[in-house]
Length: 273
Ligand SMILES: *[C@@H]1O[C@H](CO)[C@@H](O)[C@H](O)[C@H]1NC(C)=O
Ligand SMILES: *[C@@H]1O[C@H](CO)[C@@H](O)[C@H](O)[C@H]1NC(C)=O
Ligand SMILES: *[C@@H]1O[C@H](CO)[C@@H](O)[C@H](O)[C@H]1NC(C)=O
Ligand SMILES: *[C@@H]1O[C@H](CO)[C@@H](O)[C@H](O)[C@H]1NC(C)=O
Ligand SMILES: *[C@@H]1O[C@H](CO)[C@@H](O)[C@H](O)[C@H]1NC(C)=O
Ligand SMILES: *[C@@H]1O[C@H](CO)[C@@H](O)[C@H](O)[C@H]1NC(C)=O
Ligand SMILES: *[C@@H]1O[C@H](CO)[C@@H](O)[C@H](O)[C@H]1NC(C)=O
Image (cartoon, rainbow, N blue to C red; front, side, top):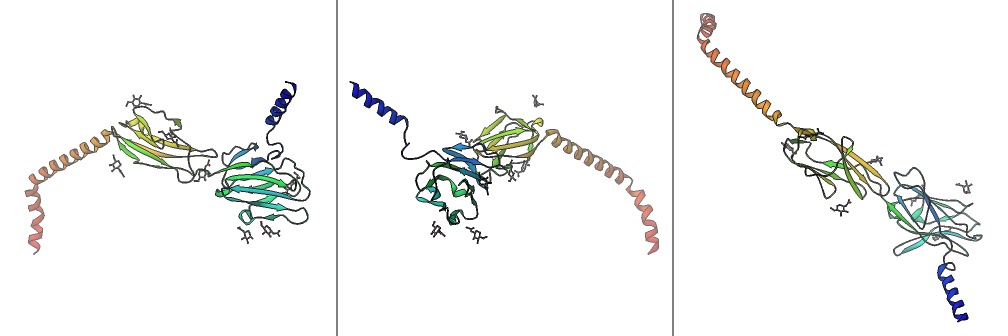
C-alpha cells in the first residue's frame, strides 16, 4: 500500500507541472500604441494584433550567453527571424528585413506586422527555448460604404447595404442620427449588413450610419436618406394644373382680343410696303 501511494503522488506531481522539462516560460507580447482599436495589454500564449502595427516580443529571461534566436513558424515554413551570436551584428531573415528591431541588451524584438505574419513565435538560446506564442494578425477595417437609393417615396420600401472594403467585419450595427436602431416590422436587418426600411414614412428621413467592428478596429460611415412626401408629388401636379389652366384662360382671353390688336399692329406694316 505504502509504495503504491507514493508512486501515485509522484505521478500527480509530474502531471501538475507539464512541460517543465520541455519548454521554458513563455514569451510576452504586446502591441505598441498607436494601433487602431487593438488591445494594448501584454499577453502570454496568444496575442491579437493588426496589420501595420508594431508588436514587442520580450523574453522571460532565459540563460543566453552564446546564441539568441527569435523563431517563426507558420504552416510548413519554419525559420529564424533574427539570430544573434553576441560577437557580431544580428542577422535578420529577408522575410523580416527592414521591419524588425532587435535589442541586443534585453534581447527583445519589435516587429511591424504584415498580413502573412499570422503564426507561432518563440525565443531560443543555446540552452533553452520558450513555448510558442500564437500571433493573430488582423486587417483593420477601412471606412465602409453604404449603397442604396438616397431618395424613397413615402410608403415605399428601401434597402441600404453596408459594404466593407478592407478587412473582415465581425459585427455590424446601424444608427440613425447617432442613435442605435433596433429591429422591428418597420426596420429590418437582413444578413446583418443590410438595412431594410418597410413602408417608409416622412420621419424615416435622416442620416443612417453603418458601424463595423472587428477585433482590432471599428469604423463607420453615414448616408443621407430622404423620404419624399406624397404631397411633394401631388403639389407640383396641382401647380402644373393651375399654371396650365391660367395659361389656357390667358390664351382664350387673348384670342378674343386678337382681332382689334392685330389689325392695329398690321396697319403701319402694310402701309410701309
Ligand atoms: C544570416 O542567416 C542566413 C540564414 O538565415 C544565412 O544564410 C546567412 O549566411 C547569415 N549571414 C550571416 C552574416 O551570418
Ligand atoms: C530593405 O532596405 C534596403 C535598403 O533600403 C533595401 O535594399 C532592401 O531591398 C530592403 N529589403 C526588403 C525585403 O524590403
Ligand atoms: C534595449 O533594452 C534596454 C533594456 O530594456 C533599454 O534600456 C534600451 O533603451 C533598449 N534599446 C533600444 C534601442 O530600444
Ligand atoms: C476608417 O477608415 C479610414 C480609411 O478608409 C481610416 O483613414 C480611418 O482612420 C478609419 N477610422 C478608424 C476609427 O479606424
Ligand atoms: C430611387 O428611388 C426613386 C423614387 O423611388 C426612383 O424614382 C429612382 O429611379 C430610384 N433611383 C435608383 C437609382 O434606383
Ligand atoms: C450575420 O447573421 C447571421 C445570421 O443571420 C449570423 O449567423 C452571422 O454570424 C452574422 N455575421 C456577422 C458578420 O455578423
Ligand atoms: C414617425 O411617424 C409615425 C407615423 O407615421 C409616428 O407614429 C411616429 O411617432 C413618428 N416618430 C417620430 C420619432 O416622430
